[in-house]
Length: 217
Image (cartoon, rainbow, N blue to C red):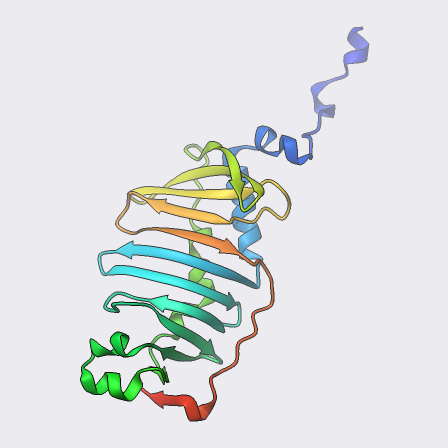
């Protein structure tokens, strides 16, 4: 009987999805999620981010090349606007009420047209959007916070302390271990990100030149 037991060195961690949360540590699960996200070339991002400057809301499909399209609202804007970045150049299209904050003349000049500001392309900087997935993972204080589902996919919730707050990730049990949701709470900057369309093509074209005007204030 003793000889039939073998030694513990022969034991292997089960690789089934059912065993993933049980047999992997919280830091390892979070690292799996971060690695999967940093390997992406494109995704869809819905985010609400808050800091001392105000609230930024993004609903964007973006690629590693910096092209993106969707909707954007940044501090100082009373409502969101259509937003495109193509080949490093930004284009914003808002309604008359969107531009009215800049004055009646601005509303008349820009309402319903694509306006290139030369200042907003950084919102589609892929590396910047992926920056939360480069944060340090505390080997001692990262915890498992339960399971659940996001859009029908089984996930494990894990969180790690960050400067003044906590970063929580919903990590997919199935490979690749994408993170469909990320949340930052308790610090000077807080926010929620909902992520999808992993590595799906993002086809972005600049608006026709005849529909574009330069922003002059």
